[in-house]
Every structure is written in C-alpha cells, then in structure tokens.
Image (cartoon, rainbow, N blue to C red; front, side, top):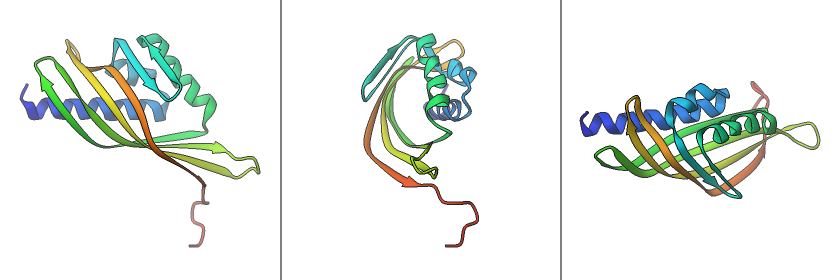
Length: 145
C-alpha cells in the first residue's frame, strides 16, 4: 500500500468509527477496533473490544442522537503501525429540563494509535481530549431566522 493509500485508510477508519457511534453500529466499530483496543477519555478508560462495544449502548441511553464529524488527521506511519491526532466535533442531542432539546457540542482531539491487521487498519488506542464544550438549545427545523 502507498503512503497515500494508508492515510486514506486511516481516515476511513476514523470516519467508520464516527458513523458507528452515530448509527449505534457495533459492526462498524468491530471493523475498525482491534481486540486489544483501549479508549480513554475524561473520567473513563475502557480496555478490550467487547467492553468498548458497550459504549454504543451507553450512547443510545444517554442521548437522543449524536453526530460526529471528522475534520482532519495528522498521522505518522511506520510500517504496520501508525500514530497521530484526529480532530473532530461531536454533537450530542439530549432532553433539556424544560422539554426543549439541548445540543452538547464538543471540540475534540483523539490521540490515536493504529495497527495494520490482515483486514485493514485498526485502532489500538484512542485518547479523547475535549478542548471545549458548548451547550445550546436545538432550533426547530424550518423556523424563521
């Protein structure tokens, strides 16, 4: 695989992870997470594929919907291993106390490590860093500006 192909494959892994979170697809996460994956974030550290798949269930319980957007990646590839930073935005829709939905938005950076396996690049470690967050009401679709 060329360096460009590897970078494209790493980005696809990040996008598949994001799609999996939003669609609650454990199959998407299985496609891009190694069996020995470790995901770390504010107040949590989860090791192992099956344990991390449980995060999909947590997302479904905690939020009405989510949207994760992958912005860009800086990666260094050395043979069958890679490391780098993935910058993203994560939006989490939740019920507000007055019945109006709220949107919790995180500007995030993942400190990532990947390994090339027989079926493609897999995350072996993701450390979630929240640079800032914003909480705002969700506007009605089609509402006048």
